[in-house]
Image (cartoon, rainbow, N blue to C red; front, side, top):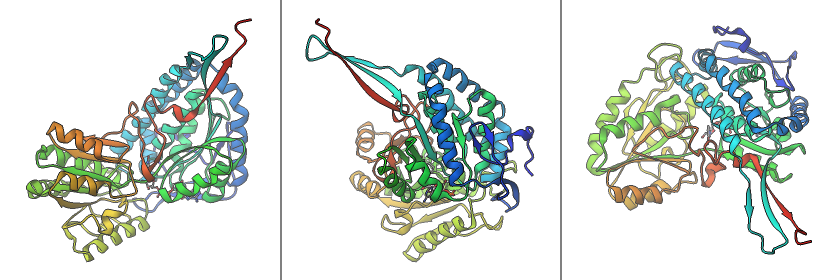
Amino acid sequence: MLNITDQQLIKKGSYINGRWLTSAEQIAITNPADGCIIASVANAGIVETEQAVVAAKAALAVWSAKSASERAGILRNWFNLIMQHQDDLAAILTQEQGKPLAEAKGEVAYGAAFIEWFAEEGKRVYGDTIPAPSADKRIIVIKQPVGVVASITPWNFPNAMIARKAAAALAAGCTFVVRPAIQTPLSALAMAELAERAGIPAGVFNVVVGSEAKAMGEVLTMHPDVAKFTFTGSTVVGKSLISQCAHGVKKVSMELGGNAPFIVFDDADIDAAVQGAMASKYRNAGQTCVCTNRIFVQNKVLAQFSEKFVAAVKELAIGNGLTAGVNIGPMISAEAVKNVDQLVQKSVGQGAKVVLGGKQDAAGANFYQPTVLTNVTNSMAIAGNEIFGPVSPIIAFSEEAEVIAMANDTEYGLAAYFYARDIGRIWRVAEGLEYGMVGINEGMISNSAAPFGGVKQSGNGREGSKYGLDDYLEIKYLCMGGLDK
Ligand code: NAP
């Protein structure tokens, strides 16, 4: 049983059209730290997903007709309530997902920041007037909400991945349906409880929890009432969802996988680089899409960086995320541990050396030791795949052009990081990296004011920033003629 202050935040089923669903069939939600069941939730399916879409469509006219400042006021209430319940939301998040409590609190605040940001940004959806080619005409451009937005989100950020999408959608005047990952529905349902308390009208924000991902995904991508589909998750699933959206030519945005390079040049501040690598690699036990996946270090500073980095990794404390002082919680499942270990063992077979860690941890079946590998090459499996675990492969390099080529040698293009002080190099490398986001002497780059998103097979569209509303708006051109009569 979840130990939190406001027990009303623990919900037992989907939230559709302002009502909480119940059903005989239950899904058990477990804590990845110890495998204990923490709650059970009614299992919804295709029918309930269709109901949610229909409810969102019915709510659209009233919600989109509200003024931007009316919507902003309601979204502001939601933001305030989330921040007031930050501790409870974080406790729920840690228990269903595993990340350390401090990180969970950070995620709740990070997600809420997008609600605050878009509440304000929704007031700035400006149109345009364009000089017409003939004197009797005027050209006006207005922006309107796309309509019903459907989404599917992953387990690694059960709060923020929903907040980032819903905030922009609702601020733009769209209504919203989300199917959260099956391992982590409790954070989504708690957000729905607070949405209701904030005054978000029935049907505007809907959460459908169910085990039939594929079938529910078909409704969310192909229902005629859905105007836009947005997904955060793996590239392989994203590709199939894009093709489903093609049937109805839906507007689509995708936040998919990554394979982030972290490059340390010989003119870098090495202590700062170690700190940045620790932050971007070991957060959420390495299970983030912008996590450092490959660390490239220039030969001259290889020994110095490696020694300091290994010393920092040794300090990480593994354990249940609720325990004070823990920085590495469990991975999401034993299968995730197995996948990471297979990548490590394969790279060892290919010549990599385990300097630290390299196996499942005694803390439990879902824990993997923070690991550092050296003697890695960019052609090894560990460098070519998204590791999604607490493992750092270190790859040596000598030339700037060589490392840019290696960094770009992947189908992914989400986040990249590099540490250098030479101003010419900083511009050359920043412009040469084929990524949607580049951290320069910085390992933590995501915030509500900045455009989050990738290129290549890491997806399309941007979340956050002044650009983040574009994915939820249609441009409409009005041509006014007959003005010379
Ligand atoms: P995943 O397998 O793609 O799952 C993500 C979501 O898709 C879950 O809700 C899952 O449901 C659902 N799903 C799976 N198969 C589906 C199908 N055939 N049809 C419809 N929905 C389906 O990804 P994951 O392994 O859980 O999450 C990690 C991935 O997400 C990584 O690749 C990571 O890089 C990426 N990610 C990207 C960002 C970003 O912003 N770019 C942020 C976070 C994570 P179930 O839970 O029921 O399986």
